[in-house]
Length: 502
Ligand SMILES: [Zn+2]
Image (cartoon, rainbow, N blue to C red; front, top):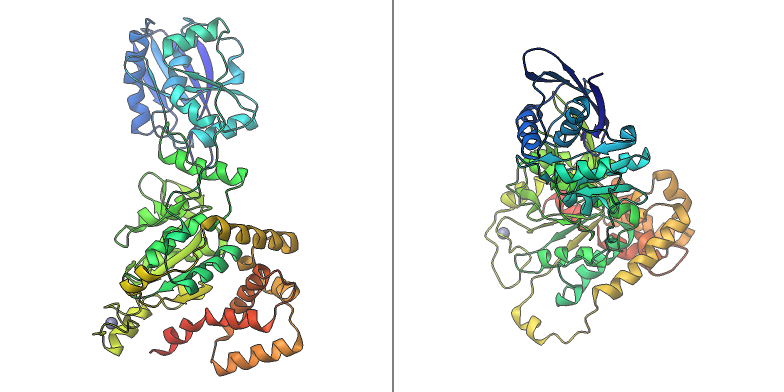
């Protein structure tokens, strides 16, 4: 019977549902029809497949060919079905016979010459294939990428002809890849930042409890420099985290060796909503998903479109972003550590003793109002950075600590949190706060007095407790003490400025 069934996969966000390619040949006017919700790129596939088959020395059957991509209701885009379609035509026209065809999945784009080209999103597809214990056959460039999936029967091929010959004679050799290693983010070391000890300490606390942080200071005080080095004090990615990071880069780029360092993303404030949050006509992850398990840094925070800032609320709460359009709906992971920076006023020199601020109180308030409310509520650590004079930089003789040594304390504090409550302090729920942030009555009365004197909002109460918990963890103390609370309150001072004006 002139029918064949070949297995392959489609891409849907980070999912890779199975697609079967059914090919049926009948006598009649030679014509090829592809059915089953194919996008334009898949329809173009018939021309590529025809040329690739002919140029590889096979025949293109002069028959009526119907190709069905099932399930029919799943949208299919991209050229990744080429290889499976070609194999399916070869099997249906009985030009070749592949033993155990149902245990194999084929993914790859064909060049007109029959060469195999890498496709995007190979890692989600490789993982899905591994879970179903099938063998995966991909272009060689994709094999280099997919080999990080463990216990996967993976085969790489350079072109259609050599692949078919090897399949028929059972001589296809499994791909022998090298295990990839975690690499340190190369954005620089903490020791390169001179001065700003208060800010460095604040960032260490933010890293230790996975708290989000806002750096406020005049231009040139080192905000971006500190932020770009933040990833270097975070612990190395765990293996499941590495795989998730590699999967995200895999759906954006084809055939590249995945980078396994902790991501640091710093989109410009002019970037579009789609570029930052994700979406578009063809679903793509945005910057917030590219920052998954890493750092999202928004410099000049008030300059960002308000719609973008509002969109950060969902990922900051849930670690995910849902993108729904007319023809698709995807959930992308977006569990990032949020860092932001801004000037204290529109001209930037409000807190700079050496320069005159030219802004009116009204302008300053309007500037700050751009980020007040929901986003400010989700920022645990607020740091006011002073201006730094060039002479201090030259003459500074402080002992400067390396990222590696700060990272050790961060790892220890994170381990303490996971041993105690199995989550970061920043993710503690109100009930959990009551359990793990218990304080002595004298400390409690100090805290209440400070809240009243400093006119801190009730909203701040839980944030301060969580932050104090992290500071106590860094200090290796089981109980939160007055000095921990004092320091935590110090990181909420901007609340008052933002809510009451200057
Ligand atoms: Zn100003």
